[in-house]
Image (tube, rainbow, N blue to C red; front, top):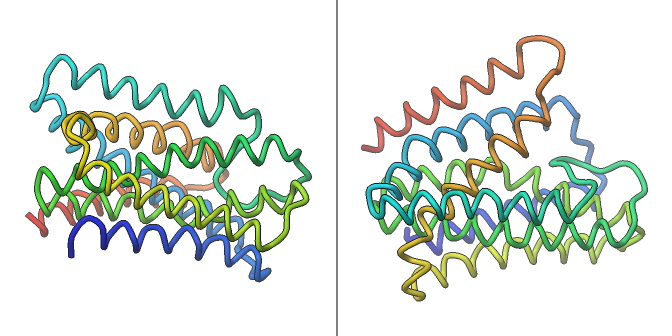
Length: 235
């Protein structure tokens, strides 16, 4: 399979997460937290062990600056412009402005997911698959987050599914544009490294940080170990 096929699978996970909310299937908080902890370990590993080093090797000066740009851009859209956002299901009433801002921020984030998948495949099929695996793990909580925000702001179930579908479309657009736009193909690896680092460290880890017990930390470190095991097997 090529990068576009993997992006389609990742996009489907966004819609699956939204479907879980709109069909009123119960997701335990603990299950979501453990899934997020696993995703955080994998995403930090792929960013720091592969994406960012490869970007620096490709362009040592500009690569580092674009890693920083990707990191700052996600923070700007998800937190500086959005006062209320977390991965997982929203159970409190929120304003339409908050849900709209969260959607805008997540559209940029999921576009970055697509750029990351395509950029990984441009380096090697092995890296592309590893990046896809890291991204796919947090797509379900992402779909849960946006769909529940839409419903919590008074939107319909149809609108909630539509918002999640838009996230999937943004992921696919990220792949297509990376493969066709020269500058994005060159700097996409660095941008995606910054985005992936931010999502793992600033979005996902705070979702389970400080929780009682060792299970979240065990799963988090298990995600790191699983990444390097998969990396050695695929290589």
